[in-house]
Amino acid sequence: MVTIFVDEQELTKQIVQDIGRNEIAIAVKKLRQQAKNSCELPPTWLLNTADALENNDWSILSAGFINMDFIGKNGYFLIIAPYQINRQSQANVTLSALYGKIHDNQEPSIEQLENLVRAKFGTLGQPIPINLSFTEIASWGNVSGESGEAFVVPHRWCFPNSVCGPALNNAKEQRRRFLGSSHECIRKIFEYETANLLLGPLEDEINGERYRHLDTQVHEAGHASGLGFNFKLKHKIFRNYTNSGVEEWRSDSLGFEFAACTLPAQEAGKLVAVNFCIRFGLDAHRLGGIEKDVDVYASLISLEYLFQNDAIYITKNSQLALRNLSYPGLLQAVELHRAQALSLTRRELNLKSPTGLLSLYKVDIHPSTQSIFQGLIMERCQRIWEQLQ
Figure 1 (cartoon, rainbow, N blue to C red):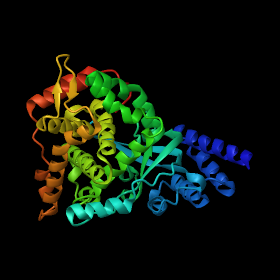
Figure 2: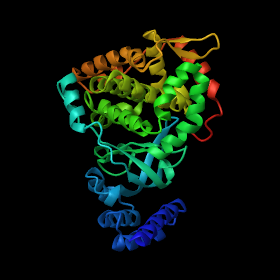
Figure 3: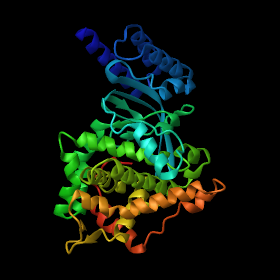
Figure 4: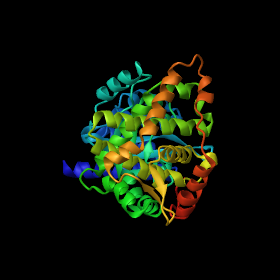
């Protein structure tokens, strides 16, 4: 049995490599071969993937993805399909492959989060997408490495209704990014004690992965709140990168609110720290900058509300510092984030027309905040990230 498993894993890695070399016919043949003998991957999914590759018709994968039938025994999965990333206001679609093993993590429960959303807003805009954290075994394309996506959102897979499927969080790639460039950026941007506070949860070898998983799941709950991400996608609200940036910030901030409602302040504050490590240590340094990138703009909005809440200041060494150096204090630092996101979400639910979102999703950024963001965050970390897009 062990020999069969090793051979199957090696064959799956070869298929990913074949996709990378654009040897589609060879990949199709191996997928069908594997479907006959697979112990770890669902045979029907493998056969459907082979058909999709051969016919360039990806609709056959929709139902299996939405129903999570692509996940096999012991959590192993293989997805091969075109995946789109939007960077520097440009869409890039590449045939991509992702092979990994899903972690067994059901915290927090989707039911608990959906009940919380209903309690806050009286309604649930859409089902909350489940976030599946996984360990990558092999990858290619727009879901691979520093230039690809480590948090693989469902609607970017190019087959019908993929938005209804799960999000996939690449724990291995996330950790690689954190231990490298993100860690270095946080040390440069923030004064010593603030940096230690922010880095602490992800440096925790026992719970670091759990904190990252929780952060992404409450973020997905934020997207589902209000009119819902799917509704906004359908009505093309995200064609403007600033609207998309506001949506990302709103989801972050509602995630803070949901964490505060479901976890002790100490633990909820650690999720804020994880978010700040991602936003300021990684997203703020994407190539598109303030003028073109969704995640850069979301990071800028977050800094704006930290200053408005008087939660952060600039030291004599021109580094950013939190006024309250504790995890409950970090949760207090985002009180304005939470209040503004709650208000925005309630207002969007009262709109008479979807076009009202275009004017509603505006945040005034003070010129001094933008100057600080560019000088103390972006410019300070130039050339640390080599391939980040």
